[in-house]
Length: 179
Image 1 (cartoon, rainbow, N blue to C red):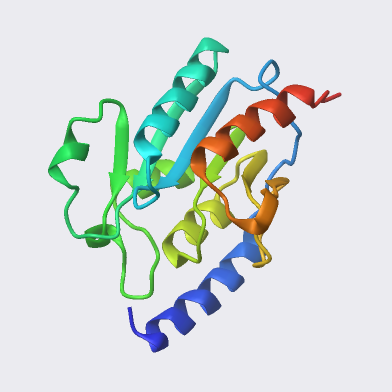
Image 2: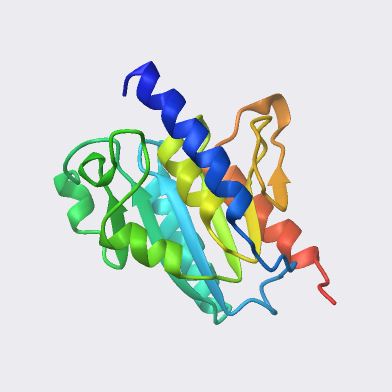
């Protein structure tokens, strides 16, 4: 993506974020009934960690959707076998970085209790998804970038790993006592 496209995409995102209204509510694993896990497939060992985390949510009776962001035009062959995972590819990103297509439309139409964002770098397309989501409670790894996350996990040394993040999310969300 060119710097021009990136700048336009960031400007459009800032304008659209101002129009998003969401009903912010803290949730733990007992009070939540729906969740979406949004993750970047380029994260090392992401599949097993995301799969285990989605099983953990299912064990807690939380209906979960899992959406992976693929920065290629096609979903890699090994990911096609991942059952119950949806993917947004580079083909489904418009010229300034906004996700479009059926998976993105379903994502934006859904209002989950919790949105888990497992992405550790600047990614405009994932920012579109996370910041324009009407999710009631948003959880992610700590970042100094402008965001609207309600809970951020700050790893020691500033380097986040997905297995560490999922364990910390379990720990801290179980501690929450929403009123």
